[in-house]
Image 1 (tube, helix red, strand yellow):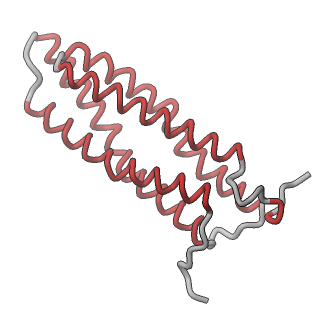
Image 2 (cartoon, rainbow, N blue to C red):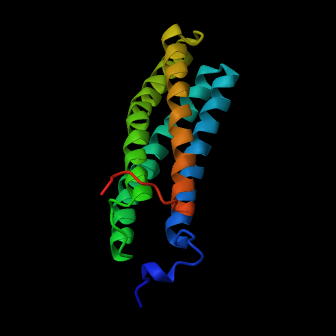
Length: 167
């Protein structure tokens, strides 16, 4: 039996969609926490090791989820009969693009941070000014992306009526 728009469970997000979104976000926040905690040690070897794992995890899990979730979300919306032009859906899709604009550079920055920390660890030198600059950029990219994720989760669960197009 297909779930119809009028079968909404008190306007809640379909459980599979919300639980998948929350797992994706929790993983992303967890990766960032590990990076911040490693950075706080100022130990190049610890940072290089953590960054290496985070880069792999981001590529395996976050990248695939970032591609799959909008596609499955669009499919779900269409199967439920929700037009993609509905305000909260259109805004959600725009937020995915916005988040991606911050996330894509973060992947590259994390790899550069890993390489900088690895080079410092191998030579026994402290972290370089380049590493510190990359970290500040990496951290700054996380703030708008995280806020956008919180808004995205709210949109998916509340599904507010938002007028984007007049007509």
